[in-house]
Structure formats: structure tokens, C-alpha cells
Image 1 (cartoon, rainbow, N blue to C red):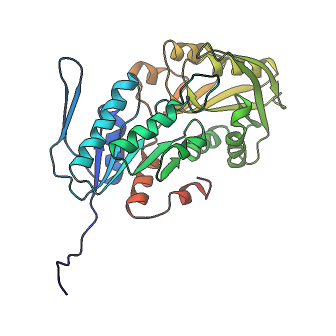
Image 2: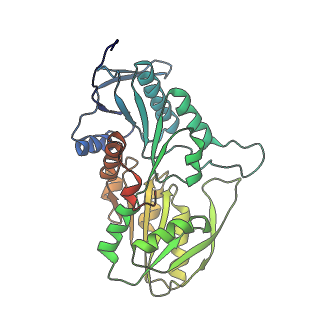
Image 3: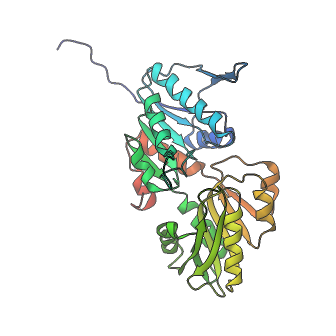
Length: 327
């Protein structure tokens, strides 16, 4: 036989941007691996430069960056890292997005608006990404924006296990903050042993970001511990209004559970002063020591979930099996 025959070995390499080093370190520990060292700096005009200190030729690259504030800066760094890997001949590049920037802009509410979530997917594809891995996208349709495989991870098992362990002995109700997240609330209900569902009828002025009005509660919540579930908490106004509405309807208490703790502006203080009994979030986004010290806020680690998914993709296993076939 002519030619050269060689049995190759797969090589997983983990890369991480500078947005959330603590989460990257946790993921690396769970994988029993190291983060590939990288040089990164800004030029005087704020342009970003990156260079990896090791050869990446032929590797299975997983590039982790969470799009926290300043969002545009960390997205650009993420794209540049992917481009560097593509030009250095990485065999496969998987972009790992604990928080997918611009996910809320997934459709046009009015004419002459962008669909920025689609633009994000196009940017990563153009940069050289072969695959995306994200945690709790704002809407599932975003998976269709990327021309390639998308692994949509869910923090649901982590959050529901915590809520059940701490509140399972109480009369629970699962509450969606709006009608659009009823399907997610149904999944919560199943994992909380069939807790009844309710939702908040909410209206939002599309011309004023981060503002909404909780009109009324639909469903029976009187005397129950209401688990108010959402994918993200940004300014905190929507969640605080929803908690107030539930207590006004006779709820015994309110526990808030959300994946992405954006916590813009005075959100942390709003939540601490709210009627909510506890706010449970994950560490998809970095938090300050002051936020972690707030007695009402509980932060759970998403690193075990991400590391399991990375290993499943690397070993050609099933990510869907991690979520009982629901992902």
C-alpha cells in the first residue's frame, strides 16, 4: 500500500478567555486538564491581541468565554481566539458559551430592528467555529441560527435538585414570570414531583428596555412556596414585580431560581430588599464578592455540567442523555 499510515490520537485542549477565569479553572479541574496558556493584551487604541503558547495543530479545541460586561469586548476576544485556532490548524473548534451574548435579540418586535442573536452565530461561524455549546439560551430557536451542531445545555438539573433538597417538604408551585416560558416551567414541575403551574401575565414596552409590568397571576398560588423560574435576571425589576404579585395573591413565600445572574446596576440591592426568600443562580457569569456575601443570594456551580458536556462531545458520546433525552 502506498502512502503513509498512522493511527492518530485525539487531543482535547481547553482554551479560556479572560472574562470569567474562575469558571474556566473549575471546568479545567473537573476535566482533570489544564487551560492552554495564552498571551493576551490590548493595544493603545483598545484592539485585542491573543496568541497561544502551545501548538494546537490537529487538536479538538474547546474555547470557553462567558459574555459578561463589557459584553462587546469579551465577544471580540472570543472571536479572535477562534480565528487564531483556525489559522493554527486546530482540527475541530467548539465554542463554549456559558452565557450567549445578545440572546434576547432573537426576533424582530418592530420594523428596522436587527436579529443580533443570529448575527452572533454568523460571526462565530465565519471566525471558524465548527460547533457551539451554550447554557440555557433565551429561546431554543437560537440553535437554528448556527449552521452546525449546537449543544443546548440546561441548568435545570442543578437548580431543581437544590430547590427540592431545600424546599421539597413544602407545598410548592412553579411560576413562570411570563407566558413565554411555560414550557420551561413544565419541565420544572416534572422534576419537582408534579408541583402545580402558574404564570404572571406581563406586558412590556418594546421601546423601553428592562421595563415590564406584572398585571396579574394566572394559577393557584395561595398558601404555597412559589418557585419563580427564569433564564436570566438583569436589572431585577421583572423578578421583583413578579414576586410582589405572588405575595399579593396569598403565596406563603417566593423562591427565585435563574441560570444567568447578569445583575446590572442596582439589581443585587433590589433583590436583597425584595420579598423573595432566596435567589438561586448559577455562576455562568462572574459575580463580585459583595454579591456573594448577600444572604439571600445562593450561587451554584455550572462547571460540572459544562465539563461533562465537553467530555461527551470529545468522546463522541451523547449530550442529550445528560438531560434524560430532553436536550
